[in-house]
Image 1 (cartoon, rainbow, N blue to C red):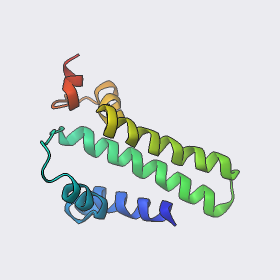
Image 2 (cartoon, rainbow, N blue to C red; image 1 turned 120 degrees about the vertical axis):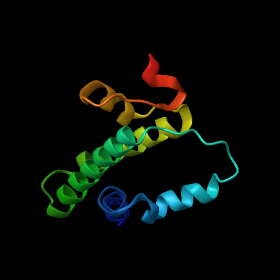
Image 3 (cartoon, rainbow, N blue to C red; image 1 turned 180 degrees about the vertical axis):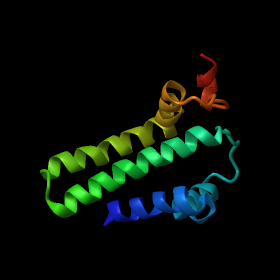
Length: 116
C-alpha cells in the first residue's frame, strides 16, 4: 500500500506538478520555520525520476510476483536509505548522479557539493 502511495506521489511530482504532492506539502508544513536550503531544479527533477523508476519497479515486481519479496523490499530500502542520507547528511543522490551523467550544469547543490 505504501509503495503505491509513493508511486502516485512521485508520478504527481514529475508529470503534473510538485505543488500537488502530498508529501512535499507535509514537508513544507513541518519545516516552514526553518532556514531553506535551495537545490537546483534539474537535479531534483532527476532525483524524482529516479525515485519514480525505483517505485515503479518495486510495485510491478511485487504485484506480479516476478521476484522474491526480499529483492523488492531491498529496492524500497535503497529508496529510504537515499532519502535518509539527504535528510540527515545533505547528500543528494540525484545531484551526484545528475552531475556525473547530465550535459546540463549542476548548480545549487546542498552543502556546495556541486563546487567540488
